[in-house]
Amino acid sequence: MNHRTSFLVSGLMILLSLTFTSCSKKEDKPTDLVTFPLKGEVVAIDAARMRVTVDHEEIPDYMMAMTMPFKVKNVDLLKSVQIGDTIQGVLAVSRTESWLETFTVTGKGEPPSSELTEATILARVLKEGDSLPSAELINQDVKKIRINNFRGKAVAITFIYTRCPLPDFCILMSNHFSKVQKSLGKDKSLNGKWHLITISFDPKFDSPKVLKSYGESYRADFATWDFSTADEVSIRRLADGLGLSMADDEGGLIAHNLRTVLLDKEGRITRVISGNEWTPEEVVDAMKKTIHEGHE
Image: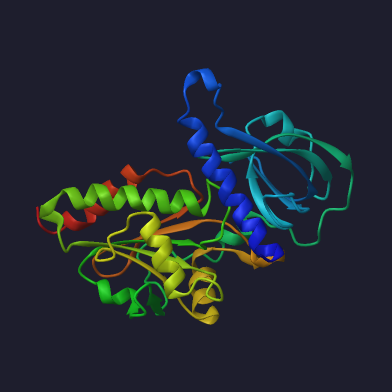
């Protein structure tokens, strides 16, 4: 087993241990929380959304060194830090989320010349009513598909990569889509009127075979939920239009933010959702609204 694979296995085992431990008997004093030491440099701060982006060192047995935005629950922590500072703290990971539980500033540094700000990212975002750039995708069945193949249906698209280790990033997006599929699938009157597309921005690793296995792990019905990827140029065209940022890090991991996109029956954007603070119910309601438009 190589070094990169050992990290992926370690991260998976930690998540599995959280799941099994949470189902233990009360007398076993179960916990659904593990913590890791974290050291790194602050490269962006989003006080409104309680986020701090850290270019962090390797987290032993969990994550290679990479740049990652982290949730912060204590507003006083954000007030104590500035871009360019070096911090040392504790990363907490539960079954459903991760956050910086605490940190202290260990060194004051010069702010980087180009800050990673949400405002800078959103300046490139496509607007409601726009169409997504045309892109040829390949899905879990090695079938070529295009987003405009699903004209006439309400479509939801999200972006992930299968090796993402944090429970409130790609794993959460896939869990949310699983719930959306289950909810829409219960209403037989909606059959053939909606579709979900998960796009991996890691085509070097996420082959159709990997994507199919990943989709099966979420009990996906591939008739209404495609797991796909594309060449790097096509992915970048989509990413740039949606404010989706991603950068290669050590160990094959990818530093990224999150975007979920809803399309109407003409393939036009009805909503671009930033981050992970949305619910499956929101997307289900929005897709049903799109489906019923023009039929009332």
